[in-house]
Image 1 (cartoon, one colour):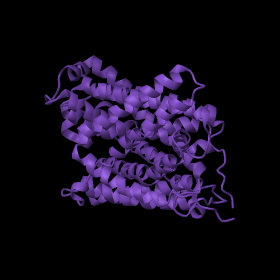
Image 2 (tube, rainbow, N blue to C red; image 1 turned 90 degrees about the vertical axis):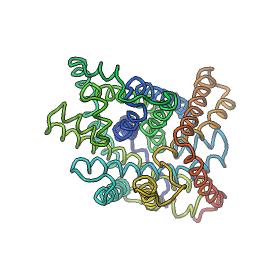
Image 3 (cartoon, one colour; image 1 turned 45 degrees about the horizontal axis):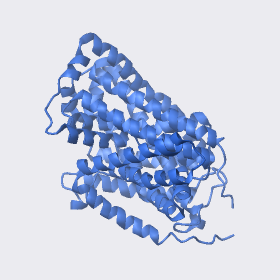
Image 4 (cartoon, rainbow, N blue to C red; image 1 turned 60 degrees about the vertical axis):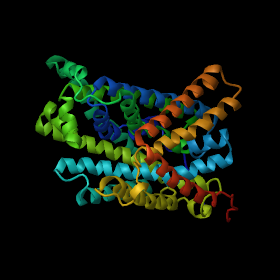
Length: 453
């Protein structure tokens, strides 16, 4: 039985994964929330983007240093295992396979469908949107399961496509806004006065966590990346830098096209209005189609990680039925059974996201929470023991790599956790209840098993 994943991705694909997974949905999806919670206070919103970006950059740098030390099957899980221990690594892998990957992948399927619905004038919570969500989810699974190489090429293509509307809006929007005075007006006049700027900032930073998340998923192709010890650190750092610059450029560009009040009033329609205002109705519609493609690129990148979730556990001889989930298709070199279970979990989490966040009366009562943000904050919390252990163990490194950057990483992670508590309040508690139940279930599969020959 062939259980080895081949080296099939290069540096450009890895950078494309980092940029492609991160950029694509959050910058459009969460920009509305950030404008809303800050009352249209543009400097406060930009500060939130900067803080979120800096935290991402610091954490990605620490992981880049780890990447020079370790090269195994699935980056972040291996890093947690080597730094903290086997049991912690297993629990990290279980969390990624059962919660992190499928929650974000399901949300991205809906976000992609959401902008498709906006394009056709349908409700973003109606049956049309949910059917499209399911189709996008299955299609993304199919391309990854049937042809991983094609999925990699699609990732590169969508990365280029998604940068077009962002860069155009950023560059042209800034030029137009400085010429007609719209940028200055939006910078100097808030739409509404928020009760607490610090609380608004923390909520906005929490929202950026979704927009910036995804870079760590690129570590899931560590074993499939050529010369990964050299290429993965470059991909993580370069990719993170590109994302921060593009996000802030796009956000300022929007401010040069339409007023913050207009963006806030129109919600999910805001981005389409901005593109149409700047590039005419036809041009705006075309660029908005690019926005949808960029969301699909993000979905594809997340699915690339999702399909490998249970394979990662099986490779360590842990998790449910390692023999089953370790199986690699000889024709596609893909972990087929792991992919199928990943898709099933995505479908379950999509149903949860709909019932908890999109219907008028929640299906789950107090157990409702935003599955687009809290799982991400959980990952930041789980980085903390890893960064501390890395500082203790890696005595051969210089002060900056061993002490300074990991310490800043710990502080950044703690800041994210605090922001989530302020932003989501009691929902954090109910999320942790569900999180605890799923993690306890994982304990029953933690024992290493002997594989059949």
